[in-house]
Length: 99
Image (cartoon, rainbow, N blue to C red; front, side, top):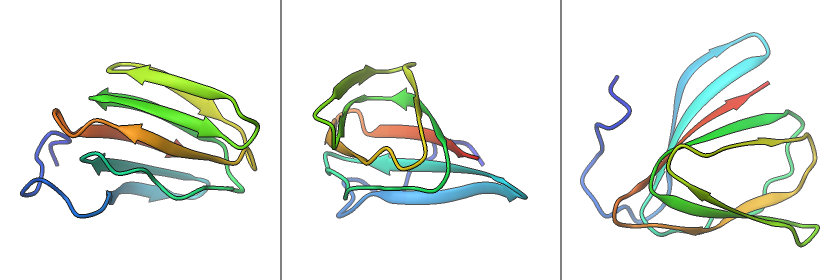
């Protein structure tokens, strides 16, 4: 799979593709074109790499992290968060590792 190979755009909702999953590790590609995500409260840690676009992550604590292409972020288990802003041009592409 090529992580830059995208479906027809724009997307009506975020597109999540599980790239691999084994034991306690799951890696996903998430593509959005301007959507904000729902709130997440996960049991796992999440390591995020913003491969393309710009985004803002909002935490339930009020903390906001503005990310640009190439940025990384580690989200701890049960650190409630959401993607509150994403770019549509270019589409935002995440690689997320859950462990």
